[in-house]
Image (tube, rainbow, N blue to C red; front, side):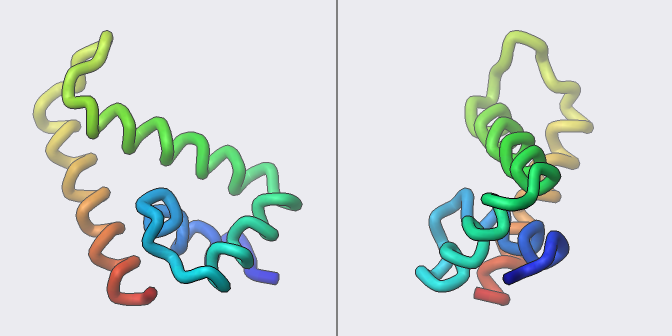
Length: 83
C-alpha cells in the first residue's frame, strides 16, 4: 500500500484522469483507509473547480489566483513527468 506522501504526489494526476490503472488502484486503496487524504482530495477537487470556473461568489484576488494557477500548473507538470 502507498503512504500519504505518495498519495498526495498522485492527487493532481488522479483528478485530471492521467494516472495509469495500477497507480489509480493503489491511490483509491489508500483513500479507503485514510481520512486525511480523503480530505486533501476533496479540497483539491474544489480548488480545481473554483479555478476552472474563473468567477466565484467570492472573487479571488488576482495575485492569489495567479499563485494558485502556478501551483496547479506545476503540480500537473510534475505528475506528467512521474507518471
